[in-house]
Length: 134
Image (tube, rainbow, N blue to C red; front, side):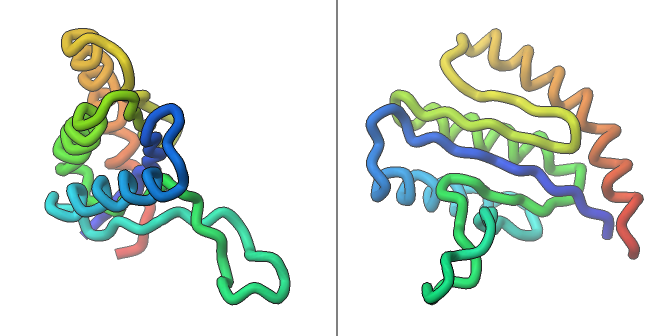
């Protein structure tokens, strides 16, 4: 089955501490795993300093979602629902050259942006999926 990858950067809100950012990211990951996605993993941000136990550093709040292109709409809706659960939350989604910022807009404006993103990424997801070996 052909897959695509969406990078999601979740922001817990202004003034959120490390624990709140981690919890918000965990909640979003759990919500995404309830969708028909193949995998949701924390993004890596390079190697840990020499002498530390971790091999890679995790980019707090950044998730990589592996999915089939048909579920992109469900993933966007899930991220939108997550961002609306608490004041100040926002998220950006990146698929190929296209990105979508979910934050501080009216429901109508947000839906217009989502529709444009889904239209634009439909072709990108299909191309990314067809480039992978089966």
